[in-house]
Image (cartoon, rainbow, N blue to C red; front, side, top):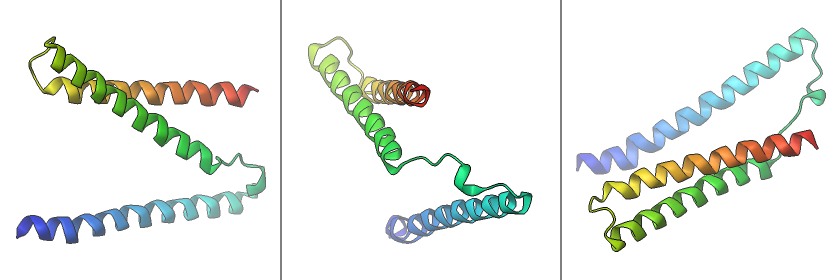
Length: 109
């Protein structure tokens, strides 16, 4: 009963509050830039594809980590199930590092 209240009540409200405060901070930052006289059209804006690519690289890394952990468990290299979580986090981080360096390379071009 309590878990259902938490899942259906508290979690969505928390997510909505986080999104609300992030948007509020973005608006506040834009207003401060306008007060200083900085032209907002000159600022570099990330395309939506950049965000999609980042999440795609993260998900791919996590998937590869889980697959590698599954293989290592079935081959008998490791006997502990924790290796799947460890490798998922490791490969997810590697995916984000690759995304970071790919973004820097595209910025230089």
